[in-house]
Length: 215
Image (tube, rainbow, N blue to C red; front, side, top):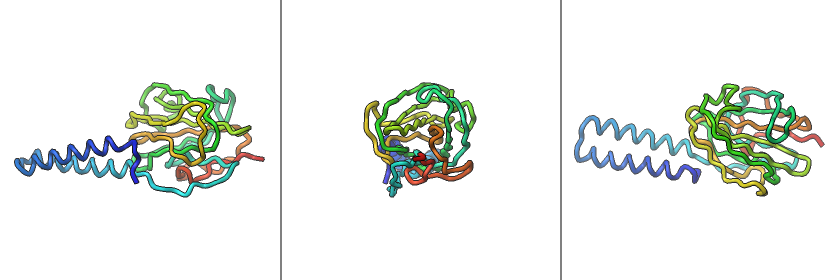
């Protein structure tokens, strides 16, 4: 299964490949052969990059699911200025170009905060990326349970995609968008949450439990 947000890029790549393949068939110049091979490699990579595997989402009203595939970069306590406006826990997930880049909702509830910030395109794993890079910031509340998460652009990720609106009700594990070509997702929650992951751990969107709200 492929992510619909990648259809245009995939189609454009295949069209370019076909055009160069036809040109190479009639005019087999070395430069055209090389360009056709490169176009083929790019098309295959896009098919792989925009893959969107079906998953059996973990159920649980007190669970916070990973919003992305990747590696836990770090877990830290820091001040969050937009939503919590206090010191909270932040789990940073680094997504390489080889990760599945479809993002998923971490908890069920109502979107009560949504903000898009234009910014820089620093390498996603550096500390400043969470503050200075282009990003979408999304807050979800379900009663006393609150989670904030960011899609953060990286040096190659020049396009954030999120199909959400403030006031919208969402379900944990639902797809909501993606980030193109390497990036990062930060997820924030308060101290009522018990963290279930550790740095350098591999996580998977909709499957890995990032934390659990204490009853």
